[in-house]
Length: 296
Image (cartoon, rainbow, N blue to C red; front, side):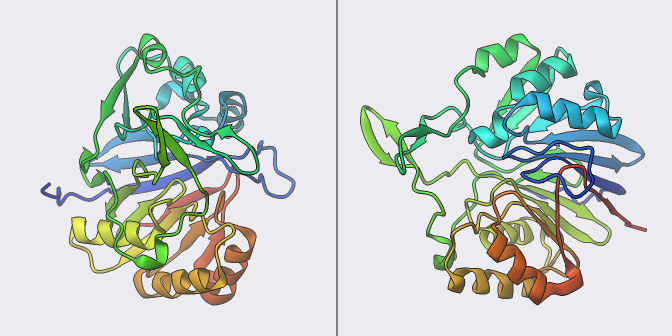
């Protein structure tokens, strides 16, 4: 689709949920992630909630600590089906309390996704959060596998093309059922957000199951940018081989001009190696961290 050339004038990202809460922090931690994206476009301010963590209680508690009224959220975007990104949806939609709240996601969100090692575990969209229940609370689903502008300068990625062989191996072996048959779940619903600013492209990911470098490359191609200004999200390098971690770091160095922020599923080893290689350009995030971009 044609890229809207408008830019976001102001951008702040608040980490409302992560696996860690940081030192001496009043914020709660939970396995999962949720980002509040506050942006200004042509003097109009919008708040986008990107993912909802694994449960609404700690998410809402962190919003209260941060002084954020749930009713101020204008839109929800879900990065993929996994429970640690979607489990808080019902509670947060209920707390937002709007009758026509857009919720943008891939159409594969409700598939049956599970793992079998070390034991069977359903890891997909929590069963209690049915599409109909979310609609009854005021949510309005927008399902698309294609890129979609959600505001001037803000692009929902749609499905990510997987071009780099180094990123083919998934960090988890997931499965799904189709017509009564079990088949691999390649997590094609993994989507990201691209935000165009005067400093360059800001990329926000959930778990980057599609591969963080695939995600960056698609964003640059879609928006006509040659580099990425900053990237925030989980990179799902937990358990990744040293070779893949080192390759990923080299690619990040080539593509990202400013800060790389990661947490959640990135993995301690990968975070340590990124800190060593990127030094001041690398920052880990945690619940309660606020990232303010100076775009002037």
